[in-house]
Amino acid sequence: MKDSYAVITGASQGLGRAFAEELAKENNNLILVSLPGQGLESFAEELQTEYLVKTSCYETDLSIKENVLDLTKWINSNFSIHMLINNAGIGGSKKFSDVSGSYIEKIIQLNVLATSLLTHQLLPNLQKSSKAYVLNVSSLAAFSPIGYKTVYPASKAFIHSFSRGLYQELKDTNVFVSVVNPGPMKTNAEVSRRIEEQGFWARITCLDPQRVARYCIRRLKKRDTVIMVNHISWLILKILPIWLKMPMLTNKIRKEISIASS
Image 1: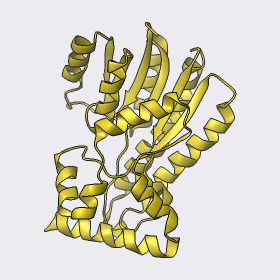
Image 2 (image 1 turned 60 degrees about the horizontal axis):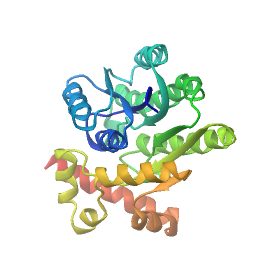
Image 3 (image 1 turned 90 degrees about the horizontal axis):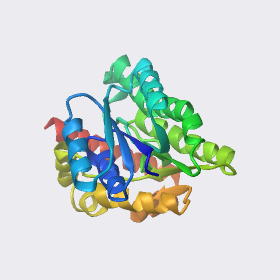
């Protein structure tokens, strides 16, 4: 797909960065999207030099609806695309009564609205490709409500449901839709520190972004509609009844908040 591009949001770090590297290795041209000031251009230049692919950058805050529309207009006006990876997202662990309205709004705008709107606006472009893919990044948190996170698991449950529904709608077309539900990953230094402080179990179930990206792309190309990465954690979540896993996960997040504030 010489003149076609893969779009990756949240591409400057963590899983998004890993997706970009893995797709560049497979000779995909890339449109990389991230917040401003995260070194996106230098990263894009590295990929271009090392893998001889074309890269374009777009720095914006996708939690603002108008920015999402501006991005999709720019892409549709200038590029043909064959893949969209909706990776950008935001979490957070706080007591619900202590958060601001803007905190709640940002999670919903980025995790729910941006993903839905990007997919909607770019779908006609994807439909022009002979074979196209949409991969939405959900979370294991989608499978259980969690106290002290509240809005985040709900937003990821939306992504999971949205992706499954869209897959069903498009399954007989050229656009294949999948969703991945990873667990905790060492995406940056702060997240890595928190994982290390949570003890042995957190460390052994933690995921490496590069391995996750490589596995996801492989499963996506094999048309796996739901991609599970951390099978141990997934099995535990599946086996445990809701009345047991909800307080267990809530206590875990409460301890995480306590550690972070100490």
